[in-house]
Length: 84
Image (cartoon, rainbow, N blue to C red; front, side):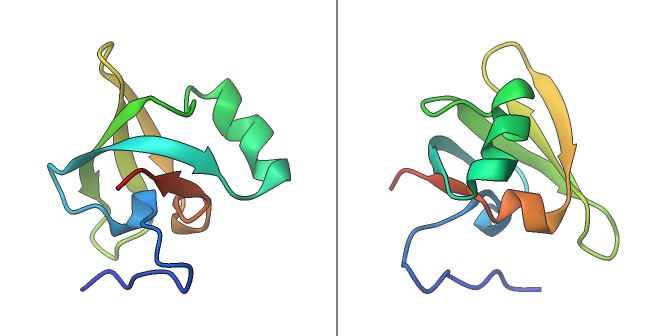
């Protein structure tokens, strides 16, 4: 299952491949941003895709140096924009 690039051209957490890391740039959805910030998805944080459920949703992200693991729906991961 190939990840599609968003129309804006910016990658999201959903575009990561298993084992791939990136840095959080910003959060697109203001309402979802509050929830994600509380869970540690802070701009500048390194994230790594640890895996996906068999049908692709949810996905598991590892955040930062502390190896904090977070399970997110694809709809939530699409709001996490990554730096190039």
